[in-house]
Picture 1 (cartoon, one colour):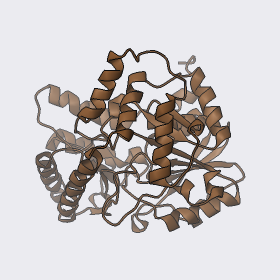
Picture 2 (cartoon, one colour):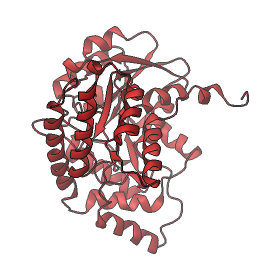
Picture 3 (cartoon, rainbow, N blue to C red):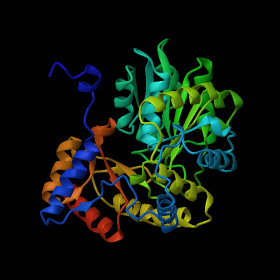
Length: 388
């Protein structure tokens, strides 16, 4: 249709939502589906956060707030970043948005101009390239390898830079790979960015879900020079099981934060008012929810790892964060969409095709479900792999 702008017609629909919706439709028809496709914790939002949202509603906190969020939440986020991430921001450098996805989009829109190139390590979260295209930029996809734990190297970064490179997007812990960059790896990548003053968009939405000996490091904490180049994105969806609350945030250099705040004032205005009070409770009320969630997911991670390692014709790298496995399915000789379609229709197992993340010889499996579903879903996946 000629009246639709090219920036929208060039956007690819979300394959993750497509698979999820298909699985939901099957369940609605009464069919048993073993969902290994989820991108959100299956646990409910903890009561103390819900109670804070309810209290805000009861107190009439249902009106507009400042576009960048209520002052007390911005201050709580700044305090959290200083205490946990070793990054110091004035609350005025914090912009609360409608989820981390919205915050990533806002950061890209504020920085990327028509024709600017943005380096994105592949496999990537599927929305990054589409966000760049919507902003008029050009996504430059850099293929990483399983042998290097799906991480971009400084050499790859440098090889793919041009005079048009404006930004690199780093996601650690990563979706779909679960990769966690070390401080040394981030420092080496940062040195390349500093050489050409390339903005770093650091998506840290999974920061609290890191396992074993791995440690989460914010690249903005490494040096003052990198702090001045980095836009840090975080949120509440994954660690606090608040996906539907739509609450995320940006921490950025002052000029970028002011630009994003101004843009948000003309697009969404403030994020949902009572959701902000839920987020404030998440950061200020002493609780064990995140620790309990992390321990539960670490147990499921080990369970899935052991099961996957016993399955023929695939390979996996142990993920150190988030709640996904990227399974290398090259030996099966089936492209990812076809593979996931057969898994769902014949074996009733929902998984996400790797092509959504830039790798057509893989699928993403999530352990955001019960052990019973994990066990049965992986048993059926093993049957599929052995039959091929």
